[in-house]
Image 1 (cartoon, rainbow, N blue to C red):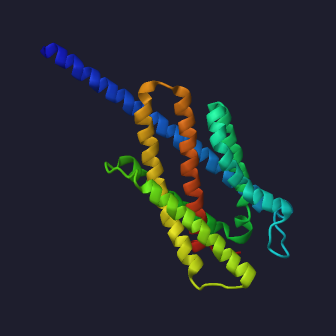
Image 2: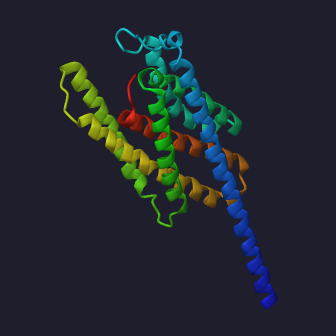
Length: 252
């Protein structure tokens, strides 16, 4: 009996060790994919934003408004996000990862104007602040014993509400010329909190999804799950960066 209990304990310990090792590899895959995506985004943004001829294809320097191509590039990432669900479901993990990298390049094109508007030092400063904040929030989501899955619904509601308010503010200012003092600042702060919460929430979700499905041994599903997790964390990072840049950035 004692020998059976010892063997059972050893088996449980081995299973736990294998689960932890697999989880670390999965999270490394998530963060690695996300990091490559960020590298592609900022490389594309710098390549276009630092070249006046290329940037002029997307931005009218005289009016400060996007060109027709600029509008297409601006809204292309949104369309690609909607398409990502179908890609994940129907395509292979390799195809989904390639689509994510293409999406990251298009996203870089859409934010390339920051290199013409803000100083390089302020962009680097904002990136560093975002990286530190993101690392802390993601670490919290990973190590906390508290179940924060309930945050998801409230954060999504906050995100949708923030987008609606942003559109409403744009309509008021562009159509009726009404500008509410401090509104944009307060809205940016609200959205920053939302994306900060989403960073922790998505990290815990990625971890829990792996734990729930690892026993099934579906390597294709796990690979796709890592890519989807990378996309969610990537979006939180990019949006946090853009908001922080608007707060800290010094204009050229």
